[in-house]
Image (cartoon, rainbow, N blue to C red; front, side):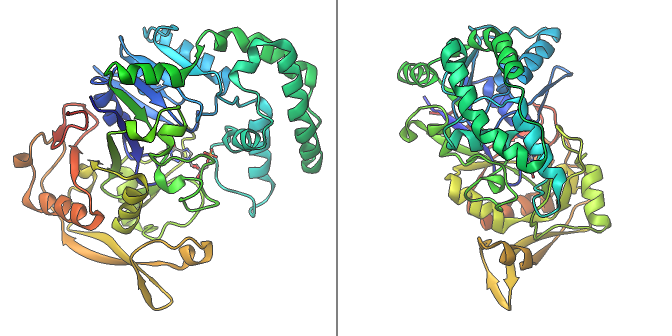
Length: 430
Ligand code: IMP
């Protein structure tokens, strides 16, 4: 039986929700392995819209185990809110359907405050974050001062952990002009929320390994996109976790050899939210048109996404760093009606042609795209369910994308409806 990792292969918002939902129907377990409630996944099931930020998409389907791995940073108050919202939509959430790793670090209110304070201080520090405390929570994890899920179970440990964190945070807050943390309130809030989190706490690594041995199918659901990876993304304009497929192993406690297929989600053009380099960005009416046709507004923050042509250089790179076996190409229909389409096939930097995005920020900012032009198509591709439904130019576009990124299309998604999908390779096939 196969275990599949799904990762975004651009800057996030590639349309993972629909694909993950489609795959989660075939999976026994769905696991998140990084990020937190900065993600925004929209699922449409039988006409009903579910919006998830923290919980794995499988939660909306009965009979599955959803898992939050240790690679995630968890805001317990948000967790309760999201669970309550789902319950009001008739979804069952119980310890039988949800497990949270005991070694998952928590996002505290002070992390969100710090995130927002830094973002509003000055333009030098601004990343354009979601303001949800993701970065500061990961800093505390690596700084060995996190409060983790298991700490909520023992009051003495909880107090020690809080004190350890506050030594650091109060010094930092003083420098930023923020009041010291109200220790007693923070402790009281944590004690109050603890039972609602501990109800789901468990040894995720053990449960996943047992299920793997029993031949169950595990779907690892990535959030954000590879270009936001803390190591391989457009640093410092990135999120604070590793989002590449390798993180599925360390972010849940399963060996890398247990991953059988990596599916990269790729949008037929490019978008990004927040600050940072974006070589193929279009600030003209073409970019405007892509944004309008693609409804490119952030699910979490409502911000308008920056849009540009498909950048094959970046996707070839992210397919390599995540070891992508096949891609799911989404939103092809947004390109319907363009007379000519462009694909970025290289960059020009200081008179040289590059076939990859360099690491140095100043070089990234100076890279100008080299485009290849292709004829567009006037017909609609929306809702196509077989290659025969697609205009010849659209097929040529898809084939050229495969060639340039050196990775085959496993799935082609042609509308938000789950059946509007052309399946080439089933990632779960034996
Ligand atoms: P943070 O993850 O809130 O720290 O934000 C860091 C960067 O990642 C910002 O540019 C955000 O816009 C971006 N980001 C975070 N989560 C997502 C996502 O789910 N989709 C797209 N961009 C995201």
